[in-house]
Image (tube, rainbow, N blue to C red):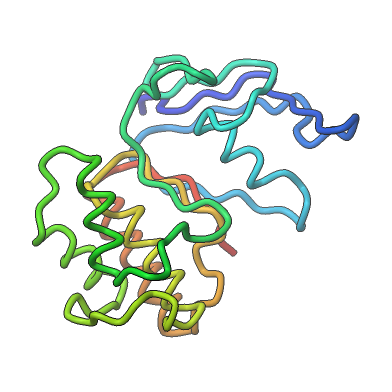
Length: 188
């Protein structure tokens, strides 16, 4: 197996409190990984570090390219961290269209497919503010899936999902993983 992600001696302190303490590990390509720990143990902070969203000590490489703050990210990534970022006055389709404009070669069919993949109806024109928490979570997942980016980084992707939606997500992740190969999730 090829090492896809390497985290070496990564630490982070916030206001004198150690959030990440000398974390070192490597992950191989082609697998789904999950981070498990109690609330406040640093899982989300670790995912933020992997995405170069926070400053840390130590080093992180993804596909043998350094991941550093204020530098271009070495690969395109699909991500859902903490809670979906959506514009509540827009429909789900319109929210995904905004993201699609930032990507290359993402079509209207890709948007519809991403919504169907997570169990949302592409023809639903309601504003997202009328969505339940579970529907908003599904929209956040659709945002992450849009564009077939790799890796797919999901932080607590089952938040607000019912049992059927969780089962669907697990099946979807396995399917998408066989197509895209690399995922890092914080999923129970």
